[in-house]
Length: 528
Image (cartoon, rainbow, N blue to C red; front, side, top):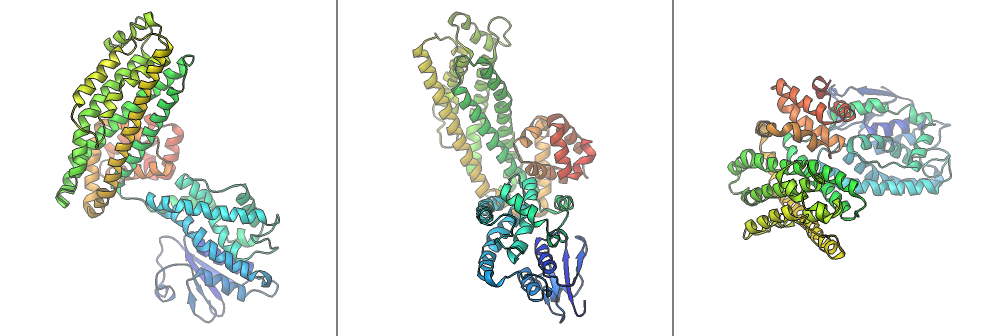
């Protein structure tokens, strides 16, 4: 705009919002042009912003700047006669001090947490954002009520910088599953929104949400491996939590013991299936590709799989037998020969459900000791046979303090075994994430083909496993997992994609399906 100021931007840029607040609060006449996300910038943009960033402010002399920090200073210097300064004379140093704090300390972490596709980057910046918001909250609490950030009666540049970030905290909560706001911040935001300099330049929250649903960067298809690792860890933690709750139960809490056993029947047995399936597709699909790229790269992980496959299968058998004993009816009508043999002595010894549960799980400790890459294969068969025998005979105990003490000790050994398995499993997955996962970046155009093979390798168990994998993931992690599958199936295999929709509808709650459909519109045709 000849002889005036003209601000150019695109999308829902927070730095543009900062500049617009500054120009409006300073009563600086200006024009604003907002390009649509799909639009290309004009040719002169390369001169105005050599690095391609936005916003860009054209000054009356025809020059340009693409620095939002400079735009705020320019707005303050060009302010109208009756407009307050964004840099009050008696608070200039305070303003500049806080500018230096919030630009790198608040703005950058907030945008990294919101915009980064890589969960490791999000995790790196979450504590930085939390620390910055704690500092902001402390300052807001120290100021007089119904004043701006620094306790002034008019806004300063700090308000212009901070508001666009705080306005996006609900988006961070929605997309990243982490809530950073608090009552103090919420009250401050409401106060700012009583000033038209902030509301007239603000973006509509629902429009921003829909924009980010479409445009937030996503991970590549092979991120599926990392997401499965997340699901495995979280399911295991929940199972361990349930077993520790069982440890604290007394004989008067039989019903809760049975509830725990029923939940463990679903969670642990399905978790074992997931671990087995995960290892199987790695061995059959992924590792051969990695070996072709870098011979010997998968040897360690392969040896760990080879050791654990038989042991895990035996643990699964023993664990299911233990669950069956815990849930067996008290007399006639038991569901299997194993349960019947185990339950028969109960009528004589009158062992309570809680003690019986602890006893039979304690007998599985031998199986757990053999799981994990740091254990030796030697003696595993004897341990497993001993474990299986103990499960079958576990209820043949007498009620008394000595027995209770013995059961407590045995169950403690079982919990130690669970902790041991968790440690070994974590180390195995961490090794894959460190040494093997980065190799997926070398797949290039082959990645989607490898992922599609993984999908079909696991498809026989997918009706059970897909909802189970999604269950402990955050809503946005679920979206990423389903996005990966959609890339492989939505266009190329629509019939299979329709099956996936059926698995979601039957395995997830209606609310979860609705949320997932909102985050990933490509799901709509197969879940409605």
